[in-house]
Length: 607
Image (cartoon, rainbow, N blue to C red):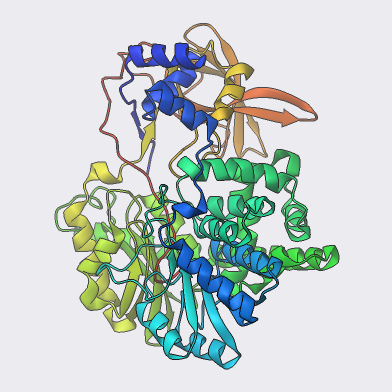
């Protein structure tokens, strides 16, 4: 999709100066805070300290849930925790099982199978649970929309407690059961993941904060791509420290097979090392292996399960690559078709016109694994910056998973506009799932394309690089690199920092990593020099050596052979414009209107 346009939000010098003086931070960090909306010292200090927390009693109605659970524990009744097959569903199930075991409860669990059960609570599952003696079902990461299913459970003589964080039904109907849900129950921070909700319920059950499970809260919060702001930020900070020193044999074995050094554990190693291996089991087979890994106290069994999850993850990656290859081939066919007949793929919105692609991509394939298509849809949506729906075909039916591609597009709204072509669908703005008859796919593709074309513009789908601070180069050292670590953890809602050098030149460019990457020296306008690397660019950069460049970088602490040093990582570069902005706080003439970013999990079907 080409290089993004640079967006440099306004940054009043007075606000920067006030933060610098009140907090004792550098001009660069003050710029970052102001451009991210923390221009008032109290709010900026609260963000940096990341100490927001609320008691379990802040959930309205949690007393009814606690009373129901304690009643069944005292009676010795069988309690089943019904979770979900992703990391958040597995970890929230584990937190509740561990808390109930600590109370001496008769507790087991049920994790649905993605292929046969689908997402969430089902009537068939509840019937089976009733037959095997369950008297109380506690849901974890599901069931806020399961109005009929909870009624069925009550007809079977079972009580239900719903713990969830997903979006309730549009008609406002809620299950007739005690509910623990941050948005529904008026909790002061509505963006908790399901494991954090379970953690708060466990706190109420045990009468203390179960800090031994903060490692699971951090793992799930990062994996579920919820905003790393507010209480989530505090929980992940504390949880990462707990995870680095965890005594759970399964998590230690998982770090070993993932080659994650506990001493260097951070949100990135969790997101790309640990979480995919737990997710892989639920994507390809059943998620029970991930839950067994977390719950086992046997180091030998933990190592065996971790090795199995590692193998399944490699299998998942192979399946993902195969589907991506086929999907990209279909995209090229669409491009060639549009080029041959002049079709722009939309009805005037322009999102697909320039590239010869439809405004929304709907792709279908035989034998595509329904547990993997969501990952591929996410990758393609990120690449092509437009809605993408992938459909796994089986006979005359298909199950699909989609991603919005840009925050300007409401994917759930798009599916609603095309509902006449769908058998079933659900989700939210950024991610959704669907079921469809094979013969309806062409009409659905055309309808979604027309809808996207009518609401999206080229500006909506153009990539943007948001600049957090404009520097002259003198500050780019270890002191600033360490200071910027105070903004971590990074993720959804708190993206990594982008530092701009408005007038720089590159020199001594050399290949590294078998020619896949480049290392070079950056000369700034102030005469400063710094070492830098560029990943996945090949041995050549976007701006020739010696030519004035406008470039953005991440500033990292690189550790190698026991030594630490600051390192610039090139994000984007382009030839410097004729008029260069002054450092610090003067916006570029090319300032664009802000436009947000993306991602999420499903409500009806997990992707």
